[in-house]
View 1 (cartoon, rainbow over the protein chains, first blue to last red):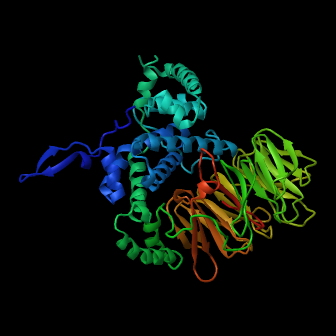
View 2 (spheres, rainbow over the protein chains, first blue to last red):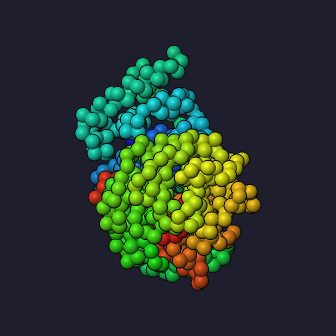
View 3 (cartoon, rainbow over the protein chains, first blue to last red):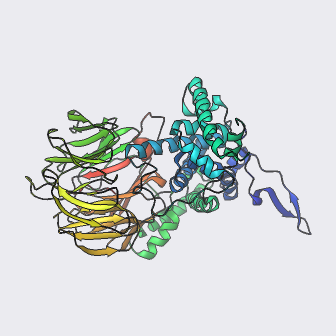
Length: 203
Length: 379
């Protein structure tokens, strides 16, 4: 699984060095090194860790809950929870998947709680004071519309598989589901998604 | 086509990613600056910081300036020295809480009782029963969680007891407003095309009339008799109502909309408008003080900032009106702030864990009310 595909923050990848202030590339610090730094009190390492994982955490939450304010809260709370528990984190594991699991579980839970309160996404009253900002980027609105047709559970496995790039086995472990359930949700979810996305296929 | 969807997902970008990232980083940075001592590397320095932070936390209720400083320190990280477990409440009464772990009550001595796997709940006026819902079921349970009666209706939510007698319960069901007697009989439809805003009974005499306020799909506020269906008055608001709160004497209806907070008199005339976009509101038991959560980062009472911190969700008054419980999911804390007398702040952390024991999903629970305020509003 690759979870570190996000561009590393500029401050983390470049240093100004030498008498002439020459820029030379620096190899991004490993995740383990960043975690050690965070535990030792380095805010720079915390920021590097945050910049590395925040975008995917926020995107994943948004793709599941379809509410940008809630997604921001979910990703933020998940990161805070992860940092709070960092001293107990098993450093043989990867931080990104651990954070993503917290994000996805919280996002699913948020959907369930909202559903219990009957504040559905289409409700004209229950939503945010201002109209939600539309997603940006090529196909983003189409992806969002297509995902809206899936249940939260199907959305979660699709997002984990194709945005966060988990393997089916990792999804099963993260969501505490049987492997077969994950596979069937992936298959059905992807079929439904692609049939809807076909309507927007520019080719 | 099968290769197309994954590619589109990878190219997806959420709204305002850079803005969200900047906001979240400021919160994370502030949280880290005052992180738990276990993560710090220089304990002697940590000890020196403790009294400073304690003073700052106390300063939250001393002055607006103190609140601003406190806001920097407490941004979503929580109040310093928060108790790791709920061991007592600062005022008499019991809390009602619902979350992924079901519905719980918390007594004044901090003891918890699990009432069952319900998704929502509300106190009866004197705390003798709780109305609880789960999916398609509405029930009344006693303080031990024993079901006294239950009915099955589609998509049930937001049960609300009539005060002061508890002789009626209003609830929403699949876009309709229904009313049932407090003993579980005479369930009937009162209105259709109802918005998902919790209904609010107008406090009155024990035997009625039983007038209930609700919001229509079109955003109109309606007050009507829960038995006869006769409409007492209606009013429109320029923006969508989100919460209805009656004063304890039933002479004022406070309506929180997406843009302001409006007060109507008993006849439906608008008497005051507060132009503030609040995310939660709660009236004190005596009906004299309105607590508002503004911008999700500050609690105002009578225009005075009582508490500040990023990610506040709601507030609930203690039954004696002396304390406010601030519902703070971003910090995973409940913060008790004294609203009367000398300023005091007491906090409890790890709320999600305490109300999801053994569960795979730990989420901050919803505070349903602090028994036995007349309104029971928790925002």
